[in-house]
Length: 72
Image 1: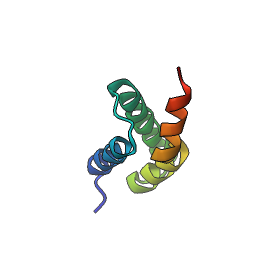
Image 2: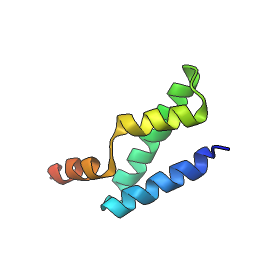
Image 3: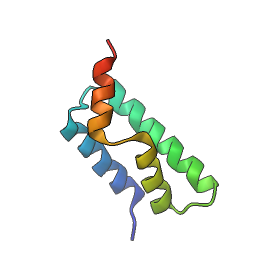
Image 4: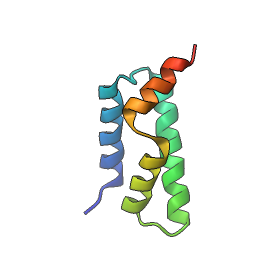
């Protein structure tokens, strides 16, 4: 059975492994992920679908790391 909290914890580990280690960006990304999941669930997705689609929308860890490098 799908466990949303465990999936989010695993996602955070992927972000850490990719080098997004500063607390503020990681917390902000986590907040965006949770908001996106909630929105998708209100639209009719189940937890697993909502999580998968939300992660895809937010982006892969490597791409996000590059985006954070651009910010001075």
